[in-house]
Image (cartoon, rainbow, N blue to C red; front, top):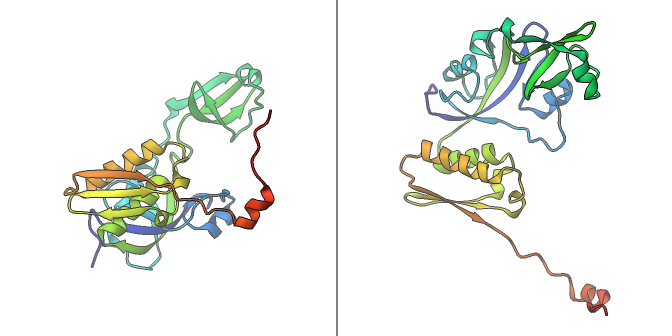
Length: 245
C-alpha cells in the first residue's frame, strides 16, 4: 500500500550537491567514510521520519509517499524546496583585524562565527574579509538517493524509534512499558550523563503526546543496576581498608 501522511518509516539516504557531486549527509557508515564525513562514536543506520511532518526537506518530504520497500530512488530537491535561495543581503565585509585579534587566519571556505552567527568566508582582500551568512547549501540543487527500509506499525516500535531519535543511542537499552493511557520509559544509567538529558526527556514526552493522543502521561524511571561484586579471593588480596592516622 502507498505511504500516507503520519506513517512512521525508516529511511537510508545519501545526499549530495547536484552541481559538484559533493556528499553532505548520509545515514550509511561506509558512505560517510568515503565522503570524509565519518565521526568517531557516531551512530549510523536508517533514520526515522514521519511522512508529512517536515522532518526532512520539503522537496524530499513531498516524495516520500511514492517510496517502495527496498527500492532505491533519486529525488531532486530544488533550492526553493531545500535550503532556500541565496540572499545577497546576507553578504557582509568585516575588517581583517577582527580575525587577527582572535588569531584566526581567514581563507575562502573557512567556517567562522561573527557576532554570534555562523558564516562562511567567501573572499579575503586588503584589510577586509567577505563573509556569507547564508546557509552553506542555500541556492544549491540537492539529490537524495533514498531507500525505504521499514514501515513501523506497532506502538512500541514507533516509540522506540522516537527514543533513538531523541537520545541518539541504542534504543534497545531502554525499558518500555505501554499501559492504557501511560507510557513508562526506563532510562539506563549510561544515558543519565548525556548532555541535555532533560531536553531529551521533554522532547520525547512531547513526541509521544503528539503522535499518541490516547496517552495521558509519560513517566521516566532512572535505572541503576547493581554492580557485580568482586570474587572473594580478589577481596582478600586487596586486604582491609585502614583509616589513616
